[in-house]
Image (cartoon, rainbow, N blue to C red; front, side, top):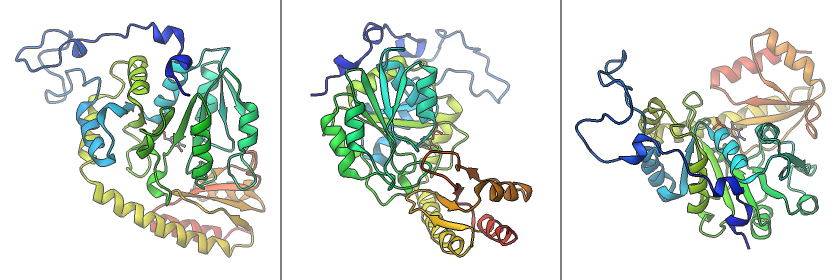
Length: 348
Ligand SMILES: *Cc1c(COP(=O)(O)O)cnc(C)c1O
């Protein structure tokens, strides 16, 4: 059985979190002289002179109604990358504990592990880019705290089999982190409805992809109240700034626009796949549940360089394990995708 107390770091268990002025008094008042702010205002037409809400309540309320998840189960970070780092700092003792990652996958899990001096045990995906459950079971030991699963996976684009993820959730006594950065593009169901089922589940989502707000740096983690409490204790007090909170709130009011873009992105993806298939240098295009495709080519580096010369930047993933010869291409606007295709017609 999963018990958060058996995996939490002792120093975090004992931690008295920083108590900010805005934590100590949260009610209404006419005069705030408690946070050493500039009471006169700021050069920005009197805005932003006050510290932001450390718990981002308004944004969480809005997310709660969009996602159907209670506010107490939502953590907000400076991008989901911050949530990844906070999971390491909360649960992994440097130099002692380990996590499991399943390459080829998102690079930040490994980088965050390195920064925190935590061993990342690699269990490669299968040739079909699915979990190697036996390999994962062998890699787990008593110091394994986190397993990172990215679904839909970056850079391969496919979703990970739901049954396999549930097997991990049901049998692993540490935390299973499911990174759903691309879930809005997927035919697969999100795991955020399963929080009541699995106490060891953390789901990461972000406003950086389908929501079109990569510049704001707002990421979400959904988990049990116990896990969210720990993450809130460890996070920097004002980790999501006021501008990001206000703009995120405004953007979250326009779900319809985002849904229209998702639909168009998927149409563009299908179209791009059909067109790319006919190029001689394209060997394979992997099925994608995301807003990018992974394309296996005869000469990845030459194609990449050729596109750079024509002002088009894609991602060369050909040096990544299990991605030999592969390029990752983000789906653009119709005009951008046409430019890509027309330019590739000049490659030989
Ligand atoms: C892009 C991406 C993210 C986003 O991170 P943010 O810090 O929220 O911008 C997270 N996970 C994966 C797999 C990604 O590809």
